Length: 411
Image (cartoon, rainbow, N blue to C red):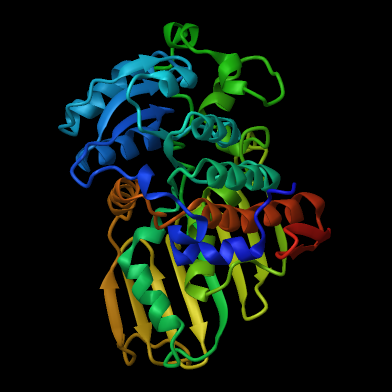
């Protein structure tokens, strides 16, 4: 693709919207309300739209292929104290056509993101697109090109990029005090054995199924007969998503690359399998190892045992950073074996929920006509690292990546 972004384009993303010539004419007044449509009213769509309403947006339209979600959406808005009463549609294109919509929130299964984001760009709408950005690397390239051609403001839902606590970590890790970063270890371990929150609920009855547009759910994916498990647990099927590696890697690989000061890996290997949740196609346990040239990174993720929780450790030649990503980040001025009785953190700070700040940043960026904290290039390059790991897992071989040419050169 002649319009595919190059590595230079990715590096320029951090320089701000001026690098892409986003015109000031696209900006709204600082006090002007942003009129927003929601595409996909599942858990993340509801959460993000509620935060947008709290940030002063008017939620005027919503679309979902499941009619039964309309009532629940209204209940959740009322519970959150949000006054929104959007017009509900069964086709996302009607949201784009809804009078006065300035921007849309795209929170649908991954395989719909490209089509819906490109349609939003063609309609001249700004967008918040939930992570993972894309279903494939090539889709991501198309999405980057479309956004820059449309000159709209797009925030990708890598919300950790709006965490001031992670920015502080980056500053320390990239300082001489930390020494050379040699290894990053990130992980996400959860116990879904007792309860699978993505299993079809008991309330999913014949009436709700009758109001579900199954062909609309499938979209461009292979045609299959209706399956309630695929509908609710779409993240674990290759037709619609990339499993744990892309769903969770969108967050963990973001801090690896951001805090580590790198844009793309040189190579990746991965291993794992489906060891417990036999209805999954994607692995329920998977480990990846990335070579970033300056350092190595490992990411382990599984939803079978939650003992280790969610966290990250950055290993330098002078200091160590350890983060419980759900509570606290700590820096230790040591590279010796950790002794909690003797070693006290040199620095420590709490980890709040980053979603409200991420949505607020999007709203402010649209009004100002500038790139947000997680612009389209960033979302693409983070999920590219995850897509490469899935490729290595599925092929059973090392994958080598040429970031300048944006292509796989081996594997």
